[in-house]
Length: 333
Image (cartoon, rainbow, N blue to C red; front, top):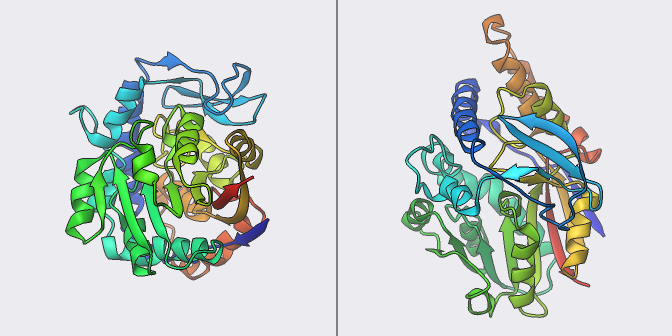
């Protein structure tokens, strides 16, 4: 299995400073604590077992670790329709949805160039077809679709958030508002050479069912691409030590789960997939420094000298596989 480490990133291209971190953490805490008041207990989303040990509690939600498959997941979650309201804003009570930053803070073209295009290039290095047909499920604003199109793919994306879809369409991305389900997956995926779920499956309490639906309805020779948050990471430790200022990563109920490598491989095995190539990267150093600054704002410490070495520091974390994300290209067993 091929492995790659480190992803160069220019943090000046996104406007996520200490003020953003404080405001986002406050909004997410409010949303989380409200949603934690009405939840249902669930079995492990990957293996359906009910044998798990406590890990940590954040914003009145409780993460546990499955003794059977090693997945870290929320012991209780809101009902699925309540979870969907985070992304489609059906509830006016939601203070901040994940799509808000994609539409209001991050520049679309910067995301395409800096974040998505390197991922697309990595995927294309590890698939055999030239100019493949690419379907991105849970595409958000369609930045990944735009990047794939820019590299010669016949790309289309689907998402349930109408606002994000309209934002992507306004920027020329080939995206549609659609909830991909067992009922329509065969038609949606019929001609797909590549099917991607980028930062998607960690948001749903039925992740194994979602992945199985995709795999069973895609062409036999299709490749599958997943980006997931990693539990064994520096960002996880940071979140555990700064539990009142979490704005990303170990963030309930947005992230119903986080994956260890073992948990992810167990999930792949259960649906008849295996890894072809994995890219380990993350934003752990930025997460650590950002939380430290937020919790010592009065000190006025100048960290400008660190800006030029953030990628170097992050690469050390990535190389040790202690980073908070991985991008995995998969094939059928």
